[in-house]
Length: 430
Image (cartoon, rainbow, N blue to C red; front, side):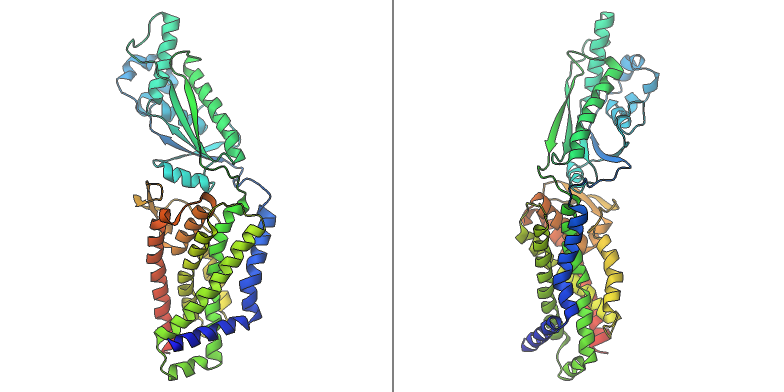
């Protein structure tokens, strides 16, 4: 233990005596956050302009028996309605697949089977909103057609058909201006859709919009970047291990330590604990800088700091891999930059990751539902980026992030173990 403490003390001194390392720990987080706050903190919407992404959960049910009675009344352009249902036909109209195109830029529709997944994508601005088509959507439309025919011809198509007025759900972020605008257009589109079939029905076939807001905070792109910045800064900090080990080798210190029969476990313990302290300070500085420059997240910063500290475990493993590759430490920063960029992007630190599903509906979430196991879940940094976002932006509690913690530790221990093994074989026993 005494030897590990000496290694820890020496590693800290090396960092404190290096202007470059101090700049990386203190100045870099401040400049990095300030730059993005200046560029993205002005309240611009976090969404491109080429298309508007929306989600749809289609729960509509249609009975095949209705086709024989209503098929002749809905027109030749809707022959497949009784196969897919009026809900699917309405969804197609939103995507501009029929003449009922509602907006510019055009909408692009994504299908969902889980509201929890849709909510996550709303929060990350992958979609603007999610429309929930009720089970009785087709029933309601047919009710309107039936009532209109009864008025014009004196008798309904189906006298037993109940007059149904259904409710279409829209889930979104009320603090997001694009959502507010698009919500109105969806309501107008629904009115045009019903008018396409039966105009205005006073008893059956009326639809109401039931909105559900997921937050009242209007976030800017800068707010969405902060959770990823905290972790990306830790990833970049992995270069310091290569610097420390290279310095130890250049001064002959590592050789003397090996002659003294220090065990690899003692050396790695002292080195790792020192880096946990250094990188934790960097997380704290970056988090404070975020609030100074206008971050508006309402989540618990202590929880956020906790996950930032957790991220140091795989970062140290990455640093040990860098040290094993670059024995002199001269190219540690360059190797770190090459590795950290793809690792950072594949963690979702900067941009939402596309769906690459390995197992659907596999992982429990903090809301009681399940989500798919994604390819990116195998990257432990992806788990802490996700956790940071849910904590800082949407006020999740740690108890709601148990899945992320478990998956993180599996990946983090694996990366650290690989780094430690390579370090011992290539550096300590070379």
